[in-house]
Length: 492
Ligand code: 5AD
Ligand code: SF4
Image (cartoon, rainbow, N blue to C red):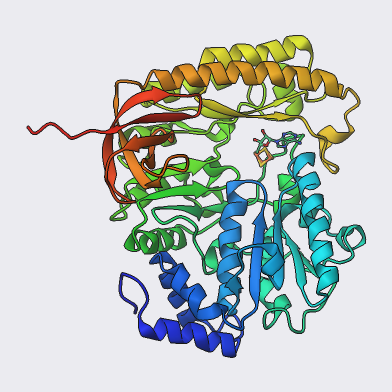
């Protein structure tokens, strides 16, 4: 076993050895541990220094949600295990990976622009390997090589583990123009990680989704829901905690239905994760309102580490539209749930997702969405214009809303959301909040940056190391951030 902090000499040698002689995946448990250790110990730079000279380099571009960010950490871990080092940009990379999203049209368009650049790089150096993974790749598995003939390999979100086999020794011997294995899915979480954040981590608890939301492509590309075994989740959390992680975010397409296929439930998982020494904060995303049951509210109220924060997608405030979306709850049920959650967790922060312009949405339906936004007083919202996704039920509905109507509605919605978020943040001014320090502020390096338990970013004056929990007096607020100064607790 390796020690707690940083790499020992044998780890470096191991990394060098792997550069010289790529070893097949699977027979690499010790190397897995070494890499995990190296990276978790915050010494990724050393690893790069050890691997970069004369070695193939990779670059991963990530689109989309937190699950994709999590998956990209595994893609990087896997490539480093093969002996590749990270390049600063795509121009310097021998292997370019695009981990894609296809939830709306916009990410597809952004991907097309990135792939346009990749084509130019490939023309300059045909030995470059272009790999496209993630949800777009899966959705387009039949067409991807027609759409983008210069792409060498493509793989779906469930088959990241095979990436190493296709790339071989860092690009040599790639079977070009092939797609990842279909129908064989694995948890990305089980692969080695090259983690991007030191004190926080994502932990995958399930893959896939059993819901049938009429607008959503996710069930098609990520498949049926499968829960990860609690023992594996806890082993990962324990490893993370040993390496200084203080906050974990449990990830799944619908975390609240976690465990049904294993005879357990999400509330039990929250309690088990709380029992791991060193884990100070637990978050989760995303819950589906239809599965948000009393035991999870009780766990949020009673389990110390579970933060007062829940991202609760509303999608629409109109019961009629919610029904057409197949969300299986209506406006009243959603509002009742919010009431129950706030009764259990009075200081709860509630951000949400809202779609405008779903087929058939009338002005009155949209006004109902605005009413619910006002009534709940969301702390923030990701707002989306409905985007028809080929293969989903909503894409072929006849009563599509014209683009200019969608645009006008989203502008009105964003205005209301921002005003309320600003008001909610202003309510915190004068309070002392517990902040988990992440590092220097992104806008002013003389300040520190961290997050409250309610998940709001705070830029503040003070002196503390990443990973410390410090009290901060909140002195200012915008619609998305807070500012303040570290406060010294009054001696008893
Ligand atoms: N069009 C617009 N927004 C969508 N979302 C999912 N599918 C679509 C679509 N086709 C939004 C939902 C979901 C979030 C991740 O993306 O609000 O909660
Ligand atoms: Fe998509 Fe609905 Fe599943 Fe969320 S719950 S991933 S919106 S189908």
